[in-house]
Image 1 (cartoon, rainbow, N blue to C red):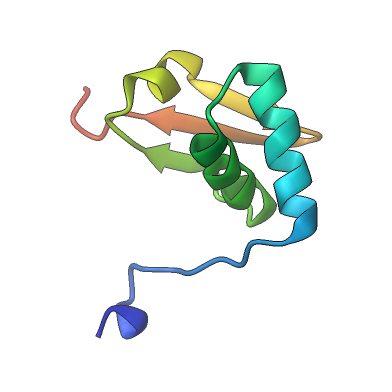
Image 2 (cartoon, rainbow, N blue to C red):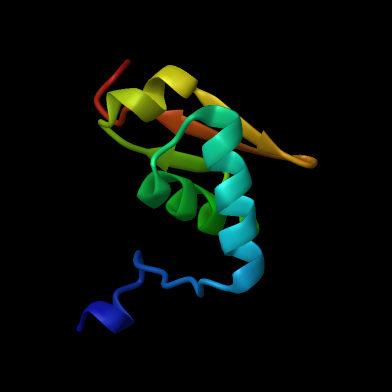
Length: 77
């Protein structure tokens, strides 16, 4: 059921994405899991991530090359 849900997407993790994640971790002082997830979103052109994670919300936006990923709290006005 979950694999066929219209609002769920699955993205691949590659060696290139891992390297991007490591660079993001160093540049933005992210933990490994957050850095990898953010790298996967950037590689797949996800422009906005809705989260309650205060560490990510403080960042507000991360840029990689010409792409920008924005973090938003879904309950904020």
